[in-house]
Amino acid sequence: MKKAIVLLSGGLDSATCLAMARDQGYECHTLAFDYGQRHRAELAAAQQLSAQMGAASHRVVQLGMAEIGGSSLLGHDEDLPEAGGEGVPSTYVPARNTVFLSLALGLAEVVDAEAIFIGIHDEDSSGYPDCRPEFLAAFQQLANEATVAGMEGRTIEVLAPLLSMSKAGIIQTGVKLGVDYRLTISCYDADAQGRACGRCDSCVIRRQGFAEAGLVDQTLYA
Amino acid sequence: MKKAIVLLSGGLDSATCLAMARDQGYECHTLAFDYGQRHRAELAAAQQLSAQMGAASHRVVQLGMAEIGGSSLLGHDEDLPEAGGEGVPSTYVPARNTVFLSLALGLAEVVDAEAIFIGIHDEDSSGYPDCRPEFLAAFQQLANEATVAGMEGRTIEVLAPLLSMSKAGIIQTGVKLGVDYRLTISCYDADAQGRACGRCDSCVIRRQGFAEAGLVDQTLYA
Image (cartoon, rainbow over all chains, first blue to last red; front, side):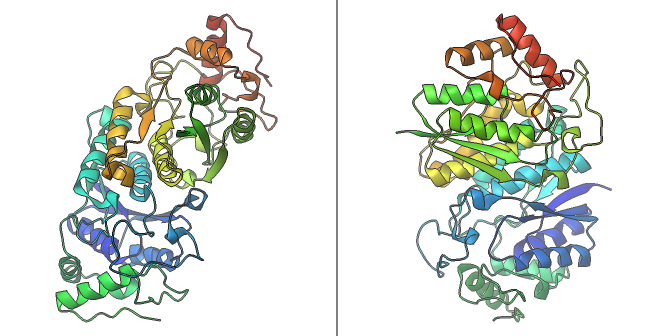
């Protein structure tokens, strides 16, 4: 059975990505990161989603990104930006997806996976540079050069099936594949019980997605 | 003053790299990783080297790479390979330089650095895929796409000045620039006092380097 590493944050996008990888016949190995994010409730969500969706393994990698800093997502004091701001918002964690994909690449070498799934998408990326198709193409090229697999001519494919999908389209796809979105957490400021704030960028985009998909949003709000 | 991130493992190569970056007029911010390596003595060496060589800051990022595994460098039980083996040795940590450079890229964004220095070199790389010029070129391309700086047309240069140098050449360069190699640790299996085993791949290459450079090797062996 072909294997894939699936980056699973515990959010709506990555849960859908996991469902799509499974639907494509991959044995899925999920990978989450404990990187000092203020929304730590998503880590419990990731573990629960991985088990409930039948992944073959789940790993949580500790990552001291707070030592590097540079993001309001890594602190607990700074106010989060409200939705609708201009430019790259303060929630951007410098090089986060690059770091996450690099560790996924290492794991792909170890478990002999032929694909990595990441749930980035362009439309709702809030202007993050590492959610763009150009970023993905550059990382694929790097994956080919950075690994023993690549040196031997076996490509580890870096797949972002949500890349050009809308939030509503993602939700509709996930519902068809049986994703239980009540288990997912999108909020940047979820409380310890996993209840969403309803105000941050991520909450607003999620709520709009359910509305546009014509589906009831069962998210628990604080 | 122009700023650079310098990856500083505490070994001979990265210490030389730091000296070269300083010599080129950069304000240097050094970055080390606590990734579960069995040769943890190098972390103390990195801190000491950073201070002694006048870096502007030093950071140690915790990185749970043991959760990913795949290398004899991450375990304490497995025997290390002796020098002169064929193929990619068991000390290869999958995607390690990719992960390290990714975190350096994040830090470069945060401190507004225009360069990243990494002490990889081709000749003595023991066949690691992520010590080759092709790897470096691919990472440069990624750096241009993955960052806000890159989106805005400001390149963060990824520099590997040792890339095509021999170990002897590196040592001669470092000596000219005043590097105190007694403070560096190359051994994969150094003891708690930082004394080298004298037998592993890394020890053998280091010893040969000093011999070829015509210099006395002051390394402390256990």
